[in-house]
Length: 522
Image 1: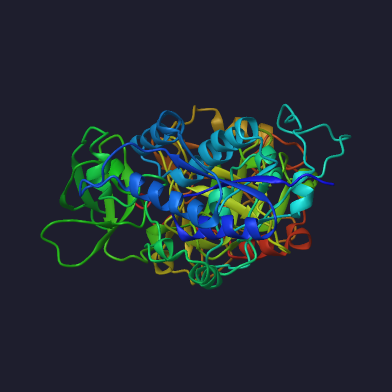
Image 2: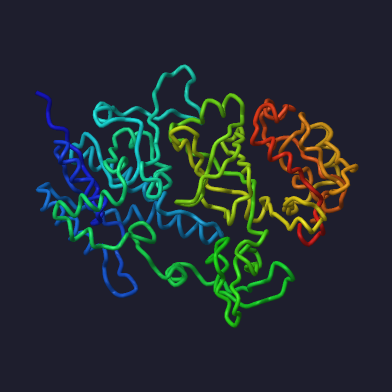
């Protein structure tokens, strides 16, 4: 007779984790509930919410008649999650602590505690997500050592577990699980993956779980809760006063306590102004925050980004991306945002260029880029965005089409931070070949590049890669051609008939590019 499987379920004191534990009991498993305390502080009203959540989790275990354990990961949370969160903000980035918390706390510390200390066959959480494994397959999983290096041995046969979207697309939480390790994912059950939130509430109401059903939806940072964000950050970071400056006329509109307190698209609280203004850019050197008078201002839109090294959930890039160095898919960088069609370009160092079919709104450095496939929408990987913001990186802006008399949205450039040496142009040509010239015969847009031609190269404009004294060749009106792909891969740097290979990229290239209207916009 087969022994009863032991599943350790993380309980937060909320309705989702409570119903997850209930469903595991109904499946006949031996269930143990564990509450994690990861933050030791009071909220702004002097109430320790963790204690109340712990009491609610304990009541759930009493109702379900299952063992209850409490563990503390306050030190681990501070070192691995919160310190990283503060460091990222101090650099002007926009991190997502919930993703990092799941990676280091729930699916590392808690996972090892459940397996090593409680003898769990599997763990479970109340996340709305699914994997490619059924329960019995989860119980059969054994620990497999992670491969070293960027890519695994190509002759090794291993069926990686996929992270799949939940049935409830609105509540889907795969965004927050996108850095979970393959080892943890193999031993995890998500009982709510096939249910909707409304049905989960119905189950709770029918099974005497009213005390968690009546609680408000958890908001704010993982384990920290909802706070006055500016006041909360300034408890840990030194204020760095600066100015709010209009992006349109460089007029000083007001002052702030720190440029790191703001992220792109956020409404700026500027005293004395009736109309709302929104953050479109930050200057970490001078401490200024640039704002625009509209939330849909063109300066807030970008369609090209570069990630840091990608964490692939399957531990390696998709086969199509490795083979072709390019792959069409979808991505998002905020929870619940609509998926955006894009093209990934793999670099040799493990980073990825992402070209969106349509410009996206308020994409900031440090936000996590989550690519997704087409069919069952697995989540192949995640990486922080390193472009388009930050000193020493490239900043892409969409400018008003009427600025250059063109009918399409324009893509502008910011000069590279490091000026080129006198021989840089010649060095570029000797290494990469001649740049494609602008099609000056186009009547609507002088200098329009022939990006829609079959053999057009697609990448950053040459002027983004080389500038002298802050004035790009593009701004000087010399050329609007596109250089080759910015990667060390020889295969990726060859000319390809793009329209026949990737229709999405062909559509992007058909929009072409134009010179910067003036130096200020660069």
